[in-house]
Length: 293
Image (cartoon, rainbow, N blue to C red):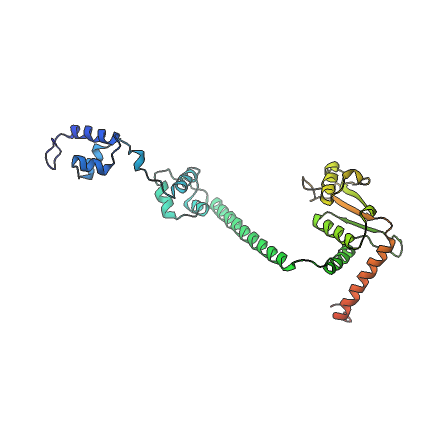
């Protein structure tokens, strides 16, 4: 070595050696030991402007988080918002983005609105998760339906949604209208349980005039597993411009109407089954004199 101990007399010569070693791929520690330069300030000056070799850059599990935090900070995000988005500590965020310019402060009202919206979005996510857990648990409680389960459910379903006879207009028809695919599938399974043959079933779509009628027919035909060409003439519903409809958009496909031909006898049985169910309830829990249960 040509430098004096502790004084590094030939600095430029020493720097040339340090740069050459750096470009040869040596680490700071290797250069320090090779040149016997143990003063960090002098070593920093010798290597000034020379990037470290790639092999010394050790990736960590937080590299992606750090890069994302820097991106968000450049977009004007606050530490609180970045923390909520990435789930890391504020101290880490501060370390990663400290060289970046601070975002412009929002008006207090805007910050309050942003914080409120983020809290509300989080609350909605929590509620939705709880809602899905409750539904899944309830679905599991049902288990496998027996034929009697399906029979009783079908009677109640028809009496709630199906056409009913009136004393002033005798129409003992078995006709069912609904827009819920699950309800339609259960109703058809019930008819099958009762022994109603597929040949007795007549289908048609009931839909608003502004909808895609042919698409709706194909949709319902696929749900029930029949050819759309077998459907009867579609019932078109006229739209009242004074009312605000919510059943619009791509998901709107109207209702499916299912009629059982020669269904008078079946209708009378359905009405009798329902009457029997009501009487059974009355025996279990008789109505009070006021009419309240």
